Image 1: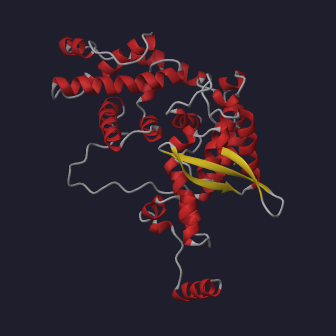
Image 2 (image 1 turned 60 degrees about the vertical axis):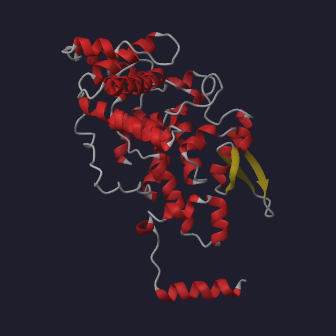
Image 3 (image 1 turned 90 degrees about the horizontal axis):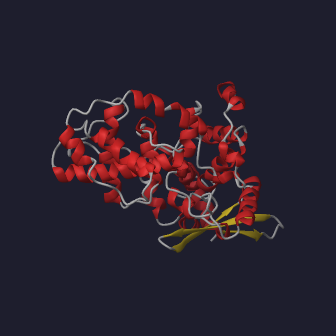
Length: 358
């Protein structure tokens, strides 16, 4: 674990000063690393008329310095993009300002140089419960703005004949183990956040919005015939229970049950006020790791790891469909290269064994 030598020197997480260590919403390191430098490097306004037009709009957020700063910084960024139409400018300004506002509210200041890193943008879009069209719009606007500051991080827009992007590759088992090991050395607030994210994705296959929606009352104990107690996670989708998933790993099951008992009917990862966590909570957990030199991944990659692992078990297909939901087979269609390869004699032996158990 030589590459993780920085673990012991990780900066204290301000969330540890909160009554509940999972509620942290600020990282002092990030507050100090970006703002002053960005202020010194602001571009000269070379189109005052367009800038005035952009800053004439506002966003539906409470009146505050965060809102004003988000609009101004969004205007400065968008001013560096090609002007296509007044309507395009208005819509893009509002999309971009909303994102900068959310990012600034989390970190404690509005800083485009931090917010527009590709990893932060992708995490925010992934963690958001956006409709497909909204996600595409946000991505187009944020990527165009991101290229202003970090052109090498963002691909140029693809033409309509370009091949569809490859689905997310599953996180490797080695990376999952490494992230658990990293979590053990983090300050308490960051450690618990990362552990819960890993537990819920790699053990029960939750998506990002499902993690954010999860409450303590959705995790209940189940006593098996052996006397062992496991956690059963009730996963909601579009307001109704979509599936139930037993977490059979003793350590992770106990951690989830303990958390459920602590928060009661509250969210597993609540805000400091006790509400639903913000959509960027998970993405910023991985940003926290990246800023400290640790490897990172995404919820999609972790969930795909879980799907591939589930598909490689000997569970009946009907049980897999119940446990994983109807998206299992559609998702696996893009992950065939990750599945085990069986010879004909192995497949024949499995089919014979399955016939005998009917």
